[in-house]
Image (cartoon, rainbow, N blue to C red; front, side, top):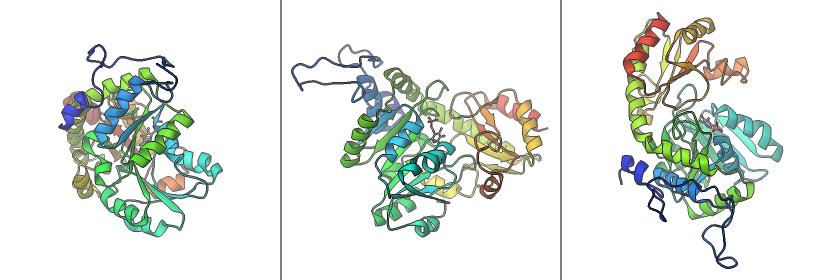
Length: 376
Ligand SMILES: *Cc1c(COP(=O)(O)O)cnc(C)c1O
């Protein structure tokens, strides 16, 4: 099945009992057993028909052995972290999602998980950070907000050589453009709150794994920890995924035009978009993904100028989050990345004049005109 077909026909696309073309929301928390221990479903935390349909779809989209749905992206990430134990060491991309950094540095550190944050766009830095007790490498590509690219195949070779798990947060690329499991990763996860849901109306997280062993371990954790996605939100996500392909195509077209426009604009100092040949990770991204996505960052030189642009745009809503049909705009230094100390932000390149766009599916002409009047 080709990807566009998979979005519609993957997983469990219909109700096997009634033929309903939309999987029903099954709210029951418990299920009648035909005899003791003789049942299809037992208790909804363990397995629920609507969540199961979504999990099968996620498995198919990422080409994995199993899929899992959690109550948020962070619930998915914390559940995956339960695969490790005190004393284990993990290597992370240094500009991972802020919530992931907080989870590792301020919560799971209490359970003695040892973590290093390195620039994974340079595989040598991963090699240098390896320790006796290293158990996994966790990467994000592209990253937020500078869209840094890590070579998934190169990192998977390091992981395989050392017997480590490779975990990839694939939120920015989506399974429509990039499938890390096919590039050597063991676990791929998403904040489904973003592109998979796609309409800014559901908070969810999903995971796909590449082996029977991980399938069993993660199901055991999902059921034990209990951070599962509700049947209603599972249904919302299935509905969102049906249009993922056409949304990503539309976003791609708009983003390409906007990135090119920004690159040619006198008021813009620098544009970060993996689709631009000037982007540092352009060639690597092209080798591992089929599209460049809808996230663009650009620098207008100062915090005051950035605030002015953000004030003047009409079709870009000032908000955190990303990946939905409506275009959003934000200033990372003052919003999503405000909790990072000023010096550290400078080191990472997250300047006060940096503006981040999540490009939506509005008419490109309107978006370009809007940015032009705000920048002029
Ligand atoms: C939003 C986000 C998360 C966290 O997901 P939630 O659904 O908000 O819990 C994790 N990783 C990335 C890259 C994100 O953008």
